[in-house]
Image 1 (cartoon, helix red, strand yellow):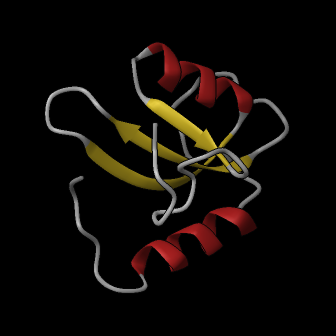
Image 2 (cartoon, rainbow, N blue to C red):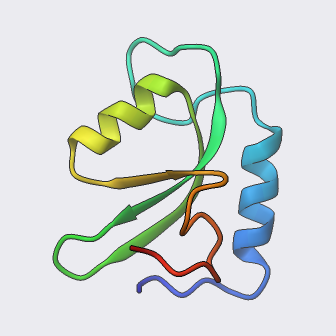
Length: 84
């Protein structure tokens, strides 16, 4: 699955997202409850966008666009987890 990140990038990316209290998405109405998520586009050539800090509205918005938004604890959240 593309892209392949430099060693340690995803670990640092995830750590930064877990510390963030601000939603990184472009939703117009942010809600409380920001959490770290992993975003994957499985259409065409699968693309792993990495980790982001998302509020509940951002999660729903990206899901409505056909993206997989995986929250911590779900299968596939960590890169070494098998996905779907």
